[in-house]
Length: 357
Image 1: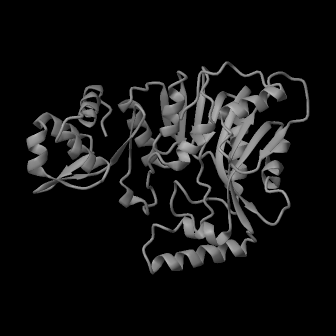
Image 2 (image 1 turned 180 degrees about the vertical axis):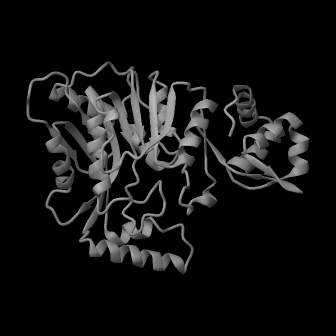
Image 3 (image 1 turned 45 degrees about the vertical axis):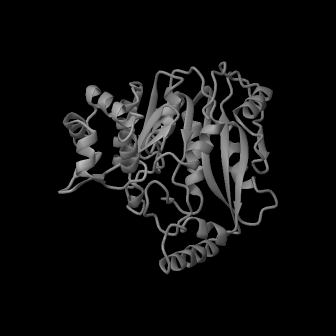
């Protein structure tokens, strides 16, 4: 995909054209992900428009039709390109904006900070939301395809302050280049408790819920004094009386304040069914049984999902960190509630400039 500014301006004009039949044809290609007859496209768009779509590797011309090669979603004023959903079972699939991204974004406080970090950037949706409030965002992903999409989406939306690079933030040895440098850090890691690590964007590359523990540790390490971190993840319940016990165990040694919101509580059977619902029968039944057997073997009694907000206090005075856990998401928790909690702990954060969503 080219990052030529003039070509990307033309692409935005093509995508945002509200007039019929162009709008309907664009929606068929990039939203419904269906081919369009070549004669229809050639009649509705100029030769320069079609060269733009082909040169950007967004469509491919066959004898009689144009086939989409990527999907494009609109999120407010943003255009986000990602993989076609028919690739979702490919190992390097890059998922577009969806419920997980929007859920995490709801909790993020956008502030006028100097540096932000997105661990596991995927298509770049969170990086772009961060970039709307600050001049500099570093986006990191282990998947080269995700890095390419993030760079493309940053250029398409005119965000020059986003730098996307390859890297494994879950490696056994932490990358010290990130330590203490960032005012805001976000992460939607590959936390799903799949029995086999196959889908890079989704399946855990570490045993148990170590992805969650390590993500929280790496996000915390990267925070500068006064910085905030936000993580959406899963953790395993093994019959503890308090659902937040595993998360508290990870956070408390780090010396950070934390606000933990539980947004899901699933039995192993329900969890296995949910993550395999897109597989057609009879393979779906086999996959669900395989997942449930693996979870049972690990001693998983329940799978919790939650958003974890972290804060590194300003100043050198020692005090015992606070961890607040809110049972279930009843619709009242937002970045404002988290701000109020951190204000009580003595967090000396910068003034708010709003929040996404």
